[in-house]
Length: 303
Image 1 (cartoon, helix red, strand yellow):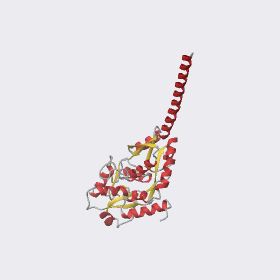
Image 2 (cartoon, helix red, strand yellow):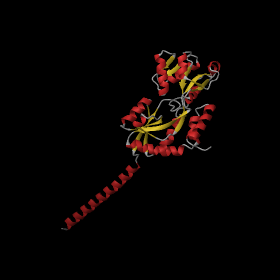
Image 3 (cartoon, one colour):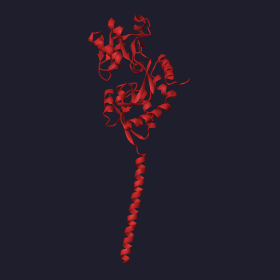
Image 4 (cartoon, helix red, strand yellow):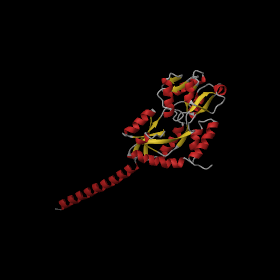
């Protein structure tokens, strides 16, 4: 009998120990899970300098590169993966909703808002400009402040360089499509470096004008070794000076959560000088001055 009681007592103690250990393990597991990132977010890195700079002396110093580093540090509860992809691939991944995918430098349209969540405006960017050699601008255009693309193509006096299959915005796309149908002087470049190829053709006099953002032309000026040709940025008639930029994420419950968290980050970053300086670093003095004033006005910042 004593042996039986002793055995039962031992069994009871072992059972209690196991239960206690299991309870403690559950507590540790719960604590571990609570501290783990609750979701993985894939960030689309578009190979389009200087938004993202993937090579050369300015690698990692693009406008969105630095912004994204700070946003990811703010969202420390997430596991972040940067993945290089084209804009088309980024939007395809977002619409699939198989994983949480975010585009850090997106333009918002009514159509895109049906399949992606967008943050509040995180930045503004100057819109497309007409690029031409300064000598041509002074001699043929008498330093005009703006150019009408439709009129330019209709007159058929000079060539226009564009990147094949690239969208320049609905309004300009329609003008270009019509010009191609009418067999105007439109030179098309293709591939990842199509815009840089056009820029080199421009400074070498092989095309007369091209379309690009002023911060992209400033980047080209830094990396293309030809200092004897000055390129100027001319406004496009009936175009606004700037457009808002957003972060877009998958249209899912997790996508909505990260958008809310990003909005908190945006509220903190908008008033900071470095937030607007990221763009101004890639603009010439004239563009930078106009941009900063537009930034103050758009975000209603006293200065």
